[in-house]
Image 1 (cartoon, rainbow, N blue to C red):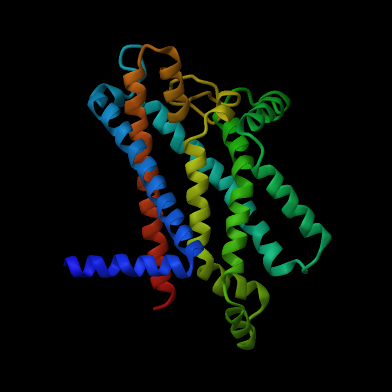
Image 2 (cartoon, helix red, strand yellow; image 1 turned 120 degrees about the vertical axis):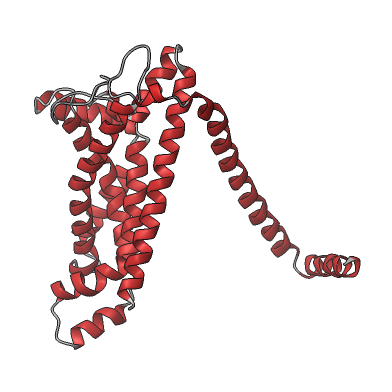
Length: 291
């Protein structure tokens, strides 16, 4: 064992002498990976340690009161807003990416303008989206502080993310798939929906996961559009708060900080569950495609 360690150490020294830059770069990559994993583990463990002892049955009561500060209404609102935002943004983003990759001519100025606009939208702070949603959907459209106003604002926010990830997933599909489909007599539309999209589905689902993660963790945009009422909405035009807004409200009041950590645990479990579920679905789609 000692001989192997000594041999490995001598090999490392010789490698450093021959190419010191490569060794430094390798160590930098390893240190960066260790630092990233360490920070992630620290955040997860910290949230679990602070939040798990405060998870009580009262937190999952059907109605919110000042005594139980239930997160159940916020959980329902989060699910509703996530589904509506994806229903609005996913078709538009996916079909836009299909046009850019499969139909638009290369070097087209119109597609270049679309890509620049998409990149610009993805870099706008969320609070700017919130102010836009307040002025446009809440005030101009007369929707008021409502679930629908918040969902429409978030759909605009996640649209660039879905477009870019779908576009990259479509570009990753080999051209031989398209050429083989065309050679068998299939048209472009049939090729896109029967050959290209199934092959790109794992990448498209990855974009949807990232979009869901941004929706679930969004606070600033929803405060200006959905409001902070802690009740289950009667309709899409009713106000409500999501889990992230609920956690922000509890921590800012300073009276239920422990309950805010408990809400963070629930939020963390939801995000991990969505990631695992989407990974399982992507694996099943890939297996079905190649069987």
